[in-house]
Picture 1: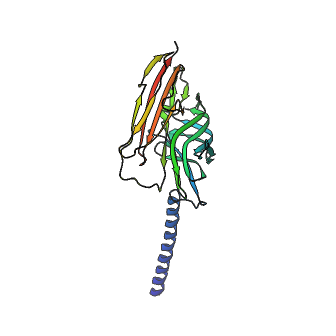
Picture 2: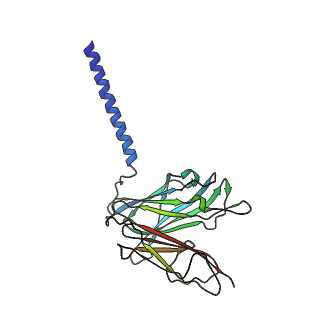
Picture 3: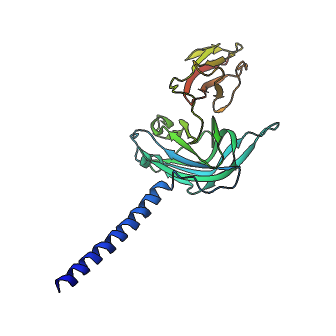
Length: 278
């Protein structure tokens, strides 16, 4: 009788061990699904897009509804092509994304170089009230690479507090302040360089105000202690901008310059200026 009880006890212990082991493997698999590359066709990589928000703004909700997400791929000898990201969600609340990320969608693409991401925003509600949206197109110029068989993660890092402007009448205006964080596994290491490039700007200073017909000609460049030719991109009021371009129309401007070296260290400088009508 004692032997039978002992045998039953050992059998139960063995079964329980097998069940716990299989459950552990299942949980581990779910946790690793995000990091492990999906089986992809030859020459293809996967882009995954997320959204997050930094420290909590003093607002109850910032609900953003989007129509589409696209990434721009470099094509030799051509202007490149826009590739649509397959969406998983079309709306999200920035206030609920403090310290966490929400998955927006993904797309399989041919491995290669990309220059930017574009998001079409259809509406924004702040604290349940419609917010004015000066532009429905959110375009972030930030070069990144997609490697064959790997997952490249793009994270739209909004600053919810800075993105919402409250008017004197208590109405809201949504002017998105957002940066693109990129993670591309498998890129070759280039030493232990952790120093970002240094950006130099001439022809304009922060807060400068000039009166038309005077013009502004921003000239900028970047230098790096290990990379002789860091990648430099710029936008003026959200649109692509080239160093040495003359700005003459009256208005308020924000010039944002980004430099990235071969070790993926990034530097960013923003200069605001205004040209007043005569």
